[in-house]
Length: 288
Image 1 (cartoon, rainbow, N blue to C red):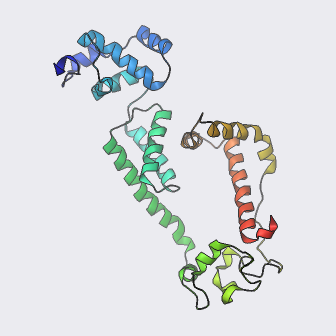
Image 2 (image 1 turned 120 degrees about the horizontal axis):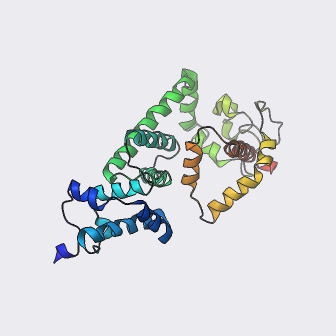
Image 3 (image 1 turned 90 degrees about the vertical axis):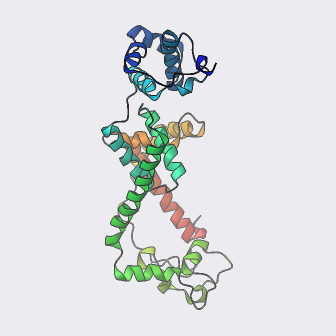
């Protein structure tokens, strides 16, 4: 009885070509009947199953993978070949430099494949790609940071993790706490300017009421570009807020572009502006 309700265990090459080759009329009918990539693919599979089996199996999702790939290609999707795998690996590497969680990377990979209309490979190969991207991200991080980590800089950073004789917490934890009224105007416990690396700046360790001697800002924010793209940025924010697009999909689209668009450049400039304001307020809450 089970064979009368399910897919056959084997699908021959002749049957694959004969029954799972959609004509132009079939594709036009599927496109006009339903919307959404998943619905179109499912309807096309059912359309092919009728002349082959004489019925549509109960579990449509259990269709043989070879049949899904052939139908998907006819509907405008493509299989994940060497070129597609290389693009996916580069996308995952860029995302792994930002997110280390495997579950996040796996979800981003699925959304990327869907947006690029690439038939998703099996779960195991995709998990291997995620694991490989995480390993490459660790190596790439070390490669990018090694020229910046001289002997003196390593000593300074290691000192941030040490608990000073006058403090009950590490200097790094103290930096994260920020200034408040509970801290004396002078250096808390003698942490002072020697507690933080010079690149971090001496404004955070100095007295709250004293004049700050921060390094001058190099470059600036292109406010004209932000103004010119402000409406597009608002549309993008509204699409993300109301669920019309996901953040990973937007990042994937911007990453896949041949060159950075004006909108992408404006987002970078606006992000730099926000980070600058955050640092200023964090180091000096009275600057609000």
